[in-house]
Image (tube, rainbow, N blue to C red):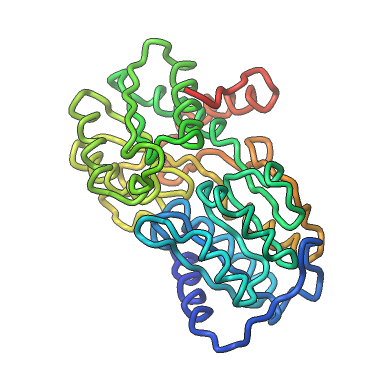
Length: 349
């Protein structure tokens, strides 16, 4: 996704925050309808830890929001959690009270609170990224899920194929089942190429401590240790902390793999851009824009989950920079094996 699009999204979001329009919106558990388009469409977005500007997960959601606004008009507002992310439920209720509809919760951590919120606002349509709506059972909530392990498998294939030392690494933001899907796929992909490959793995923070998604300094320290130990490529699934991984790679004269967005395009620093071998694309932008499309046309499937995988191009590898052009046939071969069911990618390490 292009940096310009993100900047444009930022300016529009600021305008939405400053809006004096009265709270309104239309639609509900049934999924909006044609009347939800145009000036009446008011979309609310509650960010994950790190908020706008992480150049990864949250900014991918912004890009999807901007694409939907360009298609349907209307306005949007985005808000971020506080330092310890204890106000997630408050963010969702704030958006609902202000009349935003639909409302999108960005990140699995909202799964702990969204069930109570959607029950309080049955006439508002919600979506949550990376958490199951089917488990909640509310007909005004849709889950937007991804096969992160499949895209990460391809990242592992790329790392193992391009590694000159036979030693690579993985940096996770927070040790949770979701991020472990990235780890599991990456390890499986690398070992499919080279069963003897050495793979260092470390998380920035333990489960329950979400600071690991927004601490570039700690991300840099973790990655530095891997490069000093002999790794020449490190894949991060660490949100805003990935900036530190890129800095460590640049200092070491090594390579890194980005996540969620095409970070070659979003990192904003030519020195860091030069070390990004590829990025595992998690098309949060597509999921967000498609959900809003379905809200506008009245086809939202409440109470259900939508999973974006390799076959749907919901995950994959970025090719910006041309650094994996020479191994694209290898990557494509493994991709097709996964789609055909010949390879079943694990979801746990």
